[in-house]
Length: 219
Image (tube, rainbow, N blue to C red; front, side, top):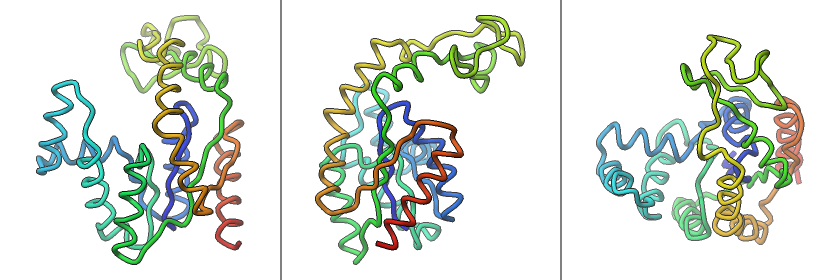
């Protein structure tokens, strides 16, 4: 299957992408991984991306599109892939359509993870990270430490990342609504959008997504 995963910040896209890709036996292709791989390997596209990133600028669509196109042609993606973080806007979505169409291919589904805005803010603004090890993550509501402000694992100080405060989260949501959400309408016009609730346990959301994709494939 060829799937695009969309949803607001805090919807759990990265977590779900990893589970779904494993269950479907297709590669999980994320924008972040594409950038890191191309930059670390020193590819021409990676060098271009690094120049923009180092200058504090957004990486242009054509660079991101080029990276995604190269990744989708690799051998492990022949039978499908799950795109996470790409396309980010309608321009990228149209480029993806054209790229696949040139090879006689098309997307099978666009999985839309739906989460109420207040829940997104609660999820992200409630995160607390350990200063000693960023892999130690807690949440004031869903996974509170035994002692407030102290990591259960190593005793390090827990803190809120600057980009996790409520004001910043709401700004990120505004960007999502303005730039990324329109791709849902773009793909809905093609009959590709499958929307599920991303509330509840991670395993429940994965099961919900798998069932929705199966129904969509059988339709």
